[in-house]
Length: 358
Image 1 (cartoon, rainbow, N blue to C red):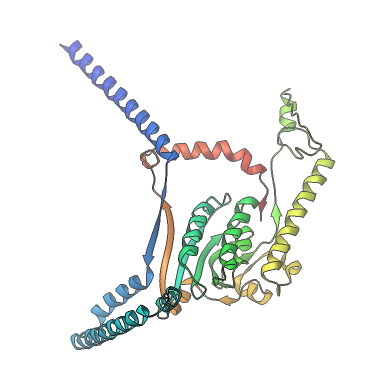
Image 2: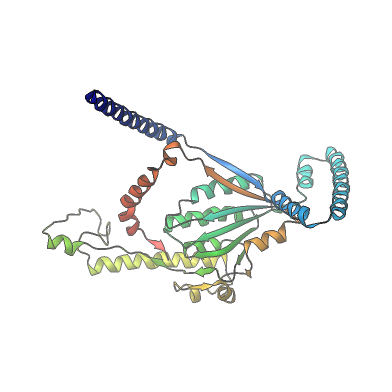
């Protein structure tokens, strides 16, 4: 009897294990399939309405009954006047051309808010691309775009592309404001300088206009353990510095020259968007607090993004634009964390080799 009990328990465990493996394999297959067709979704949030709802909720608790009645009466009167104005506008539009209708319908300014928070790899640039494209589809020259930027910089190609995405707005003459609440350094400042206006919180970190590349070299360790490393290239400078081979002074000089070239391009980029800035004075790799950076010409005003939005809320319709990609089932499972760690480890060597802004 005890044997049957043990056997049944073993069988139950085995079946459970097999079912779990099958579920994981199916989920992985489904994840791989959906990854090919993964599509994002554009989210539009009316911040003006959100602010109004918050204000109304507070006033409902703070105002007396008489004050609330007076406020509701005034709101109803304002709504009636708005409806009359809308009807009048509709009648006038019926007599206008399509271009005139478009102009009259867009009398009130719209402020589009985009958040960009990124790390070294600048992978958020893909979402930024979609957000900018969506805004360009509807925005006019009387509208404005506010980018809430937070980045300490990273890979050259990633932040170069991010800055180019912001430049698309400038090319269409759409006013662009960058707000820095915490940090916009190095590649982050490469993006910020594209704006017509840069605002920053007093203690935000700004600057760090420089380029850095670093990698370890394990050649001595390999030699100590009698391990040979071979690297075959075509072209004298196909590979300059290496992690496993023996680096030469000539290779170091070439690598340093490449960094200097990138730094010069960085300096020219900033100078093209902020011609009044003495770029050579600040392109030393140093960073400053925004209160110091203002006197150097790196930022225009000391103000948080919150204060800027509050100042705009009465004169503009404020919308937050966000492009989001839904996570699949596999990404939501606990072992997605281990997959992420594995991905990071595999890419570590490549990341260390990447030239990045700093």
